View (cartoon, each protein chain N blue to C red):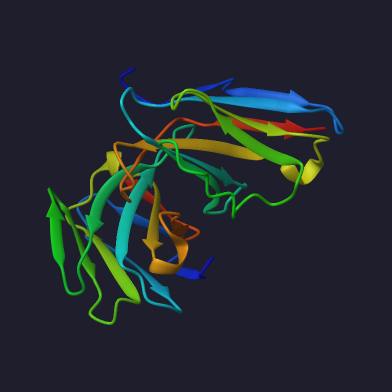
Length: 113
Length: 112
């Protein structure tokens, strides 16, 4: 597609439920990144994928968080047993290769009540 | 990740004024980037800097990669109302692979 597409744009969930956030990167981009942005804060790195290499999961805050990327394209970020502190905007980005200047999607705003 | 200190936290200026904001780091970065974020949108890359001392312009925006590799600044000249938004610096180091460390942002308000 023309840009990085994320869905849903907004998600409200009850504490303890699992959620899945989807990212559709720019066609042909081999690198995909997930970041989290809490209210009034900068972006916090979560995970990145590059081609068929093992993902860098060093930013995932707990084992409740996981992500996968199928077929080198679409990625899903899963948060299990959501907590209120998981409330944030989850941003996905992609790039043609492992370059610093990547393109972000508009994000999924997750609210845990 | 490394702590990035971005200042000022917010700025309220009149149209036509010049703006300057900066970021400092406790450790060395290989790359400095500046992004702008509008409400409800993801950040958009403004300028990327890859070499210490590099000075790069993009229209009315100018950014520099500090010679110590621990700081960067962004200047906006002759501000206009559409410059309103949150500006983030981001740095990438050899220790962080391709993950970026972001500052907390500078919120810019421009009055006509």
